[in-house]
Amino acid sequence: MFDFIRDPSLYNLVRGPLVWIAFFVFIGGSIFKIRAMYIMARNEKAVLPFINGKAALRSLLHWVIPFASRNWRLRWPITTLTFVFHIGLVFLPLFLLSHNILIHESWGITWWTVSEGFADAVTLLVIFSCVAFFLRRVFASEVKFVSSSSDFLILAISFFPFLTGFLAFHELLLPYKWMVILHMIFGEIMLMAIPFTRLGHMFYFFMTRTWMGSQFALWNSKDW
Amino acid sequence: MAVKEKIVSRDFKEYVREVNPDVGLDESIKGLTPEKIEKTIKAVLGARTARIRAVLETCIHCGLCSKACQWYLSNDGDPSYAPVAKMRMTIWEMLKRDGKVDAEFIKQCARIVFTECNICHRCSMYCPYGLDVTFIIGLVRRVCFVLGVVPQRQMDQDHAHATTLNQVWLGQNDWLDTMQWQEEEVGAEYKDLRIPIDKEGAEVMWLPLGAEPKTGIYHIERTAKIMHAAGIDWTVPGKDVWDSSNMPMFLRDFATMQRIVRGLFDNAIRLRIKKMVLTE
Ligand code: HEM
Ligand code: HEM
Ligand code: SF4
Ligand code: SF4
Image (tube, rainbow over all chains, first blue to last red; front, side):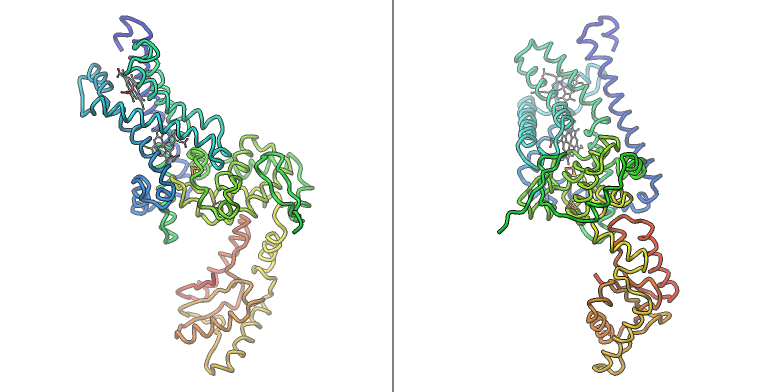
């Protein structure tokens, strides 16, 4: 932050104030969206009285564990793909050495990190999953029929931070510094996009499953 | 075998269907004006509630719901039968065009939501988010119902319910008469068998489907025998409503739907019964 005031370069901008803005928009926006959905559900009256905590938890568990639901088993290739993709997407950035170094420089804290080789492998897997999702969208008829530009956009938003992170790490294509700047910009775009696009499924997932899990418990059947 | 005539949808080239004339759809759209359609769509979908938004803002268009649907499976994986495709061709388009769709489009929606979906909720069991596609289909049915665009047979059942509170145009006299007639019939086999009408304080109230006293009379006789053999203290209501089939619910005709449910519960309260047993 102060680096930017002392030396207002593009690097210091994306490394300083924009990171703050991105996290502010991501966290603030998510809280706002969750709160808005909760208030709407409360006003709808037919929703909250039917929420059943235990049923919701059982439904959630069956869908966050790979192959624990019937459709996860039936669609095992996509299940494998989506779990690799999401685990890499959500956890890798948190335990990345280079991210930890940045956090250490800023706040003096660090936590557990994965080795660079492992991080690199997971990054490649995520990149591969994105390509596979893209091909599925273009070629699988049931997905193709319901795909629009917004679907490709959110896929791209998820893809570019990984691609540019990988290219920066290996100093490919562009000079390191420029690739890192690009990477930071894409990372920030992704964070800011989460609450305001269908990437918001990151938190809506837990809300919609809670609702449907409760409904199916009411009907004495399972939703997994 | 003669080749059936096909139509290709003007809006979605993948939506190809056999021509299937239905007065309820073909004739009823003739009275629709763009203003009326827009007003109705806005009235039904305007207040974007939590349950609508949760589906529209979460659905990632992944198609994982497709293999849940009997229509998709039995049409060799035709993508236009997938649950998410049914949302795409109806509600997404209505919202995208801000309600400015024409009568032809409404007819196509009605065909999709009334004749290509059984609102069975299986897609919610397959969607990773458990999205309530059925609820959305129900909203589109509501739009079509309010506009009067419903397949003729379904609309006729709804009218029967609205008029007689049962699905088969059976008057209260006929209903009582049928019960007594059936009691006599079984009496030949079981001397002390009764079909108790309006017995206060009974344990169980049996509520048939409309078709049973009308065309499946032997069901009455069999139910009576089962209740008799099991030694159950049972009764049937002597007043409307006794038909537990609620066709208006499937059309999202909320006014009639509520009259039926209320009537069933009113009978339960009046007779102080403990359990309702319905035919399914
Ligand atoms: C918010 C701002 C972000 C900043 C400032 C940032 C910064 C960095 C930096 C400096 C590197 C080091 C490149 C190297 O190894 O030399 C890096 C790598 C990486 N970043 Fe980020 N990043 C951000 C957001 C994200 C996000 C949101 C994701 C993905 C969800 C992400 C995924 C990665 C990955 C996967 C690598 C490493 C690639 C590899 O080792 O092959 N980053 N990041
Ligand atoms: C941690 C909470 C999250 C959960 C529970 C979750 C869950 C899901 C599920 C169930 C699907 C549908 C299945 C599929 O198509 O593979 C999905 C798809 C997707 N998710 Fe997530 N997600 C989460 C976070 C994220 C984040 C943070 C991003 C990116 C910023 C993301 C990006 C995507 C994308 C792009 C797809 C669509 C893939 C396609 O094109 O089919 N997800 N997610
Ligand atoms: S509710 Fe409709 S779309 Fe969903 S699985 Fe059943 S028939 Fe198919
Ligand atoms: S499975 Fe769920 S999220 Fe995927 S397309 Fe169907 S309704 Fe949408």
